[in-house]
Amino acid sequence: MQSSIKGKVVAVLVVFICIGCGWVPIAWAGYFAVGAGYGGEGESASVSIEAGQKGIDFANLDMLLGLGLPIIPYGGDNLPDNTIDDDCPNDDCVNSGIAYTGTELGVYAKIGLKLFFENVYLNIIGGGTVVTESSIVNSPTTGRYYEESTESVFNAMYGAGLAYFPEVFDWQLVIQIDGDNRRGVTGLVGFFW
Image (tube, rainbow, N blue to C red; front, top):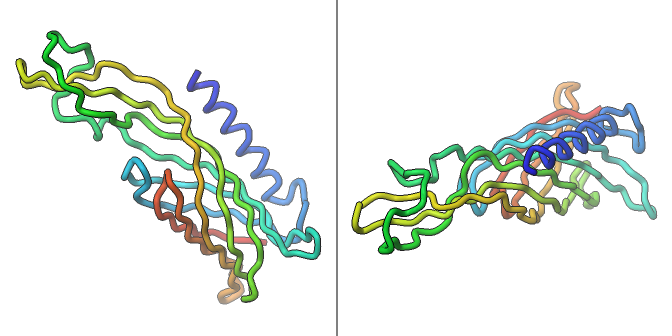
């Protein structure tokens, strides 16, 4: 199931990159940005890739539309040391909580409205991610941790941010700061045309 979801996420991102790159123009300026962040519910580092367009005229408003791919690698770092991938061997096990493992992938949309300042947009972010959650238990008898079960879980992603599109020495840049529940605080840098 997870590989099917990953395939759909990649397909959606490819379509939006085509829009963002101007191959399917809907506005006067496309953009592409990459970034990194830290925090969120998993309290981990993240990487994001985003494409979109700004300057979209809708109901006499200057709008921004973007689509991004958040990548949050957990690996096995969230598991206690020497965790055994098996059920607890006795009845004395105590629940030690949930840990994220593997890589969390998803897709998000960004809708922005130009503020009163030149080339500054206030954005809202919405989307979803899929992550593997592992149920961890501790056995007081053996003194070991056990990974009793794993399951893929969908998480809603929501937040807000600011995007700034300055021209610096003939370079058309995009600088963004986002805050959301999955990636935490994320900074993105890129270019627009």
